[in-house]
Length: 229
Image 1: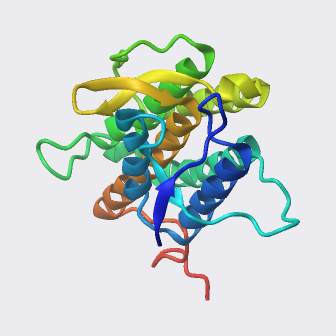
Image 2: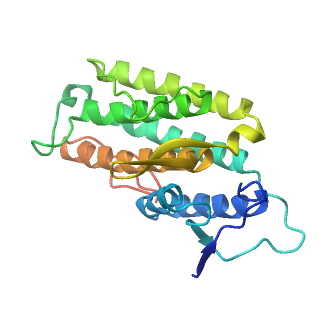
Image 3: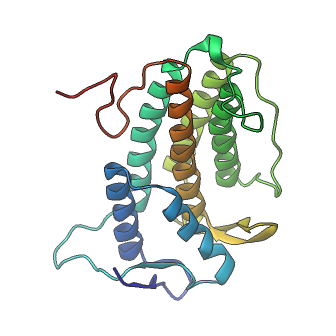
């Protein structure tokens, strides 16, 4: 696969056709379980090198192909992945909330709180209240409270994305572009980054779940505890 700069309009915003193709590839990639970290790194690169620093696959839609809506694509993946994340969180034994696989690792409760924190960041990015560096509120005392906070935040994020104007979704915000570095990063790229990072942390949680003797549900395919045949 050859990478080339993502084509942009005169305003510097990725053209809708190319954004749709790239987001479509993300959906396909997530669906087959390719590690999300690669795409997160590619998206973060956009903020550190200017308008043409991120490179998308050099493909274009075939003639007559329907236009792909970036907002609806993101929402489709967001809602599907959130349903899976909720399934994994609910499978985790609440009496093992303070389990840590290593002394420097977060407890299961604090790891789950990361999901809620990321949604809070995304909500602030969408409503214009995000400040950098962002504040990190302490985790609630119980896993039930963590899950409830995450569910509330995801619903708020989905509502904000549906209500956002095209101009808003095509705007840029101040966000991390590397260690100790802030830059102007397209909002849609931040949205994908937060979504993919939550998938990464869900993978961590599934390992915790196995280590404490819980049953790991199907995520992208069958598991020992949830076979498909």
